[in-house]
Length: 168
Image (tube, rainbow, N blue to C red; front, side, top):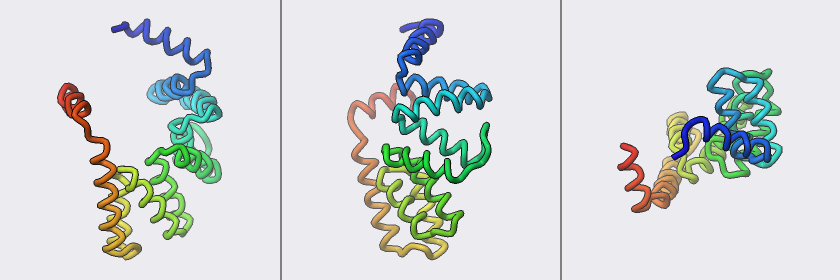
C-alpha cells in the first residue's frame, strides 16, 4: 500500500488530468478543512465533467448556503443533474425542495424514486408523507417492497466478506 504522501501525489496527478473522481475527492478534502471556496472550485470542475456526486455536493451547498449564497435555482439544477446521474440522495434533496415550494406530489415522486434505488432516508421521508396523509398505505407498501428489492440486489458473498473485514 502507498503511504499518504504517495496517495496525495497520485491524486494530484489525476486532478491535473481532469479526472472527475479526483476533482470531487479534492473538493471533499477542501470541504472537510472548511475551505468552501476550494471545495466549490473542485466540485464545479468535476460537475462540468459530468460527475453526479459533485453535482450532488454543489446542490447541497446551494440548498444550505454553505460557502455560497443560498440559491434554490442552482440547488435544483445541480440536484436534477445528480439525480439524472443516479444519485439517490439528490432525489431526497429534490423532494425537500419541491416540498418547500408546496409541490407535495412531486416531492413524493422524488422520494419514491430514491426509495426504489434503495435509499433509506427516502423511505423515512415516505413514512412521514404517509403519516401526513400524502400517500396511501398501498403506495407506502409498494415503495417498501421496491426498496427492499434494491437493497437485496446489492447483497453478494463478496460484499458480506468485505463488510465482515471492515467490521460493518
